[in-house]
Image (cartoon, rainbow, N blue to C red; front, side, top):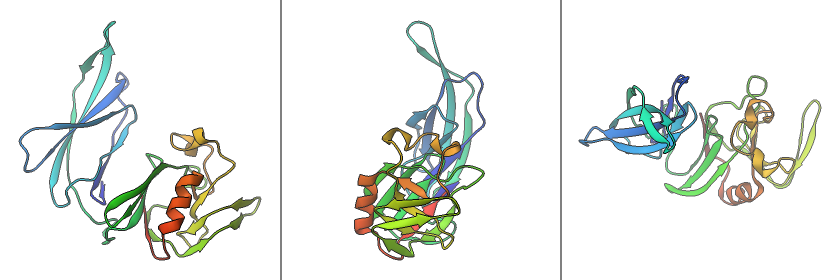
Amino acid sequence: TSQLRRISLQWSKNSVAQGYDIYCKADDQSSFKRLGSTKNTYYNTKRLRAGHTYTIRIKPYKLVGAKKTKVYGTYRTVTKKATSTAYGKKIGDTYIEISIKQQRMWYYIDDKLYVETPVVTGNVGAWSTPTGAHKIWQRSSPATLTGPTWSSYVNYWMAFTYGGCGIHDASWRSSSEFGGTTYMGNGSHGCVNTPYNAVKKIYGKAKIGTHVIIY
C-alpha cells in the first residue's frame, strides 16, 4: 500500500530466509538501489517522490559458512505508485504518522521531520488501535485516563478518536517495551503509548486539528 509518500510492504515468511534485502527503482531510473534490510516480513520505505511508480524487489537471504556469505533466494517483485494522500485524503505537510507494523511514529511539521519515536499501540485482537485518517480533537496536560477496570495518570494527552484513543506517555512501561512486538500481547487499550521525552515534544507543537494517520 501507499500512504504519505511511503510504500508499505508485507509478504509471507520464507522458512529458509534469515532476512530480506529491499531494492527499489523508480520509473525514471535505470537501475535498482538497495533501500535496506529487515528480518521481519514487512518493510516501510522512507519518503519517496509522489506520483512516481516504483518497482521493488524483496530478496530473501541466508548466511552460509564461517564467513557468513550472503546467499539470495528467488526474489519477489512488486510495483506501486507513491501517493501523497492518506486514505484518499489530502493531509498537507504537517501531520503525525503511525505505523502499527513498525511500532513507530513520525511527526512532520511543514514537511520536515520533527520527532521520530518507537511506540506501543493497542493490543492486537482485543484493543487494536484504529487505522485511518484522524485528527487531534482534545489536548490535556496532565490527564487521568479511565476505563472499566483502570485509571491511569499521564502527563500529556492528545485524543484522536471520540471513542477514547489518543497519544500519551506511559510511565508504567520500560524503555525496552517501546517498539518491537510488545503490542502483540501486552499492548495498550487502543491508545498510542509514547516515551515521555518524545510525547512532550509532540505535545508542545501539535494543535487541535493536527492530522493523525495510522496504518
